[in-house]
Amino acid sequence: MPKIQLLRNPGFLHDLNFIFFLKFNMDLYIREIPEDEKKEERIQYYNDALRQFGEIPDELYLFFHANEGGLAFLPQAYFYPYQEQFATTFDFSFMLKELSDHGRMIRNLLRFYFSELNDEEIERCVAERDAVFSQIKRSNYSQEEKGYLYEFFIDPATYIQTLHHELMKKEVLLNEYYKENYQKILDVYSQTTYELLCKYSDNNHEIQVPKNEDELYVSYCILNKYHYRFCAINDGYFYLLGYEFLATLEFASMLSSTFDIENFGQALAEETRVKILLYLLEEKETTCKTLERILDSTGSTIYHHVIILLRAGLLKTRNDQKTILYSINRSCFDTAIEVFKKFSNGKKRYLL
Image 1 (spheres, rainbow, N blue to C red):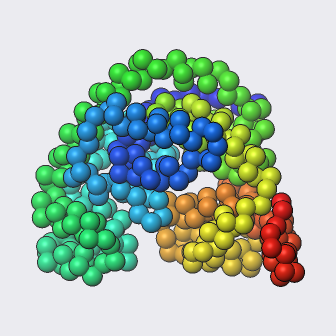
Image 2 (tube, rainbow, N blue to C red; image 1 turned 30 degrees about the vertical axis):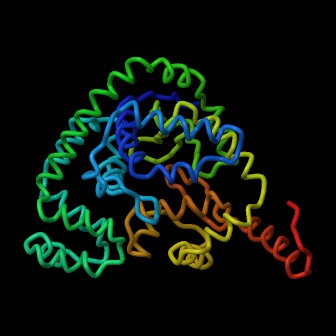
Image 3 (cartoon, rainbow, N blue to C red; image 1 turned 180 degrees about the vertical axis):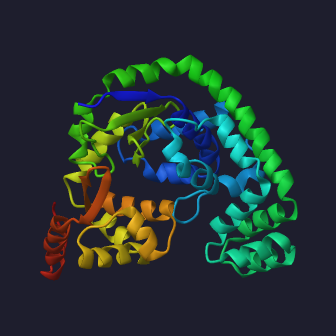
């Protein structure tokens, strides 16, 4: 069986992003908390984490505030796209170097907030302030979002400098926090086995298990302790896990054994996700890369929609060497049919 190799940098940098993301998206984290006896404890944990790392300027709103799909600019543009380098050159210095190209950052931010623009329109917005102001005015963003966009494009350099300064301040604090708490990572690393990942892969579609010949990397987050994410990289597989990820997986396993009509409905209540299902009706199986091309969308956006479909049980996965293939989970739809039959038969409630 493959040996699990421990990496520090990806988990550390995810936690660095998490500090800022939490500041501007506390409501998202609260909505994700399971409705159990530990909910208030988790809310308190998030509030304590924010207080521990000090104030964060509102000027960083555009970099870390999540859009309707739950995606924020900086993690999507400067963290997840570098997953192929997680096991090698990706560290804090590398991230700062990438962020130091102001022109590239401005273009990336325009693409994130105005994804409908082509390259020519992006360049016009970079060159002409009136062009970007016109885009902001015509957008469907809230007045708060528009205000931050106007302010950023009046003086991008000041906002980017503030971002650099705050990242460096929080990196120092986070380094100290990691020194004090690194034993937590060593403890959970000693418990993370190939067999354990196999156990949860059956009921958690976001966790895949590599074959014996593959390289297997893991990195733990101390702050975002309930996190778990899987990705394939060039020479193997990578898991980004919170040090209490097992509690999250246990809860997810429990949910996977039941049909959740609300999650089912929410998963279908979005055009892109319906298009994914319709495509799979014809093609049977597909990859995220293929969906990016077919739907003309970014990798992070497609991954977000696929994860929602997986969590609701509408999709299933299988591994073909290092490729993850997605297909329709027909048993979920069979169960849905039986549930909806109870409504059509005039029954007032359903029991699962």
